[in-house]
Image (cartoon, rainbow, N blue to C red; front, side, top):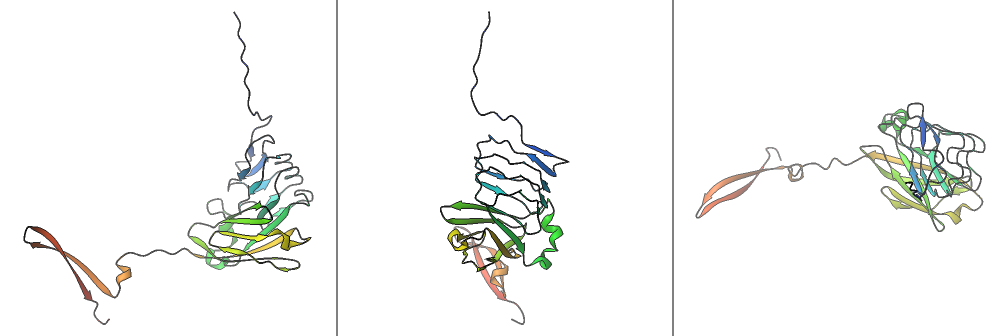
Length: 229
């Protein structure tokens, strides 16, 4: 007795491939249904034709660990805007001319310990760019312990009007005119430590003591001023 079974679904002719100990992304399945993808922070090179014909892909996150994008890497994708560190080497034909390219730099490298820290896989930074109508949205993922304090964007023609705060910013694509390259300058600062409750009542010392009252145990709170305050 024989039987047959029909299986339907989405199948990739080639799997997602990241070679050379996780440092080189060589293939992203063209028929993958995902509309966004975050490249692992171990990757330093995006190989030739890595994302070729991935028409479903609308957004890509390139971490600061990436240093090179080879020819044809993003040919035939659905991506309209892409952000990357300013130092990335982009081979000719790697990114189609109709894609807006945003290159970001960090303006507070001294406090961060230099670009080497930003580029390390353990503390990589990324900017995810996406389109919503004519609006270019930027989602910034700063290194651990850092927050975005300010951001400016410019083209060869001048400064762009960027709105937002924290990790989310945006600007209108129509302001670019014929320009397709944007320089993004991001200023980072140390994230607030928060402090403790006791820090917030300085210069007073808070003492909570248990006292016996009629019918049970209560609590008494004493504020003692520090000497010299």
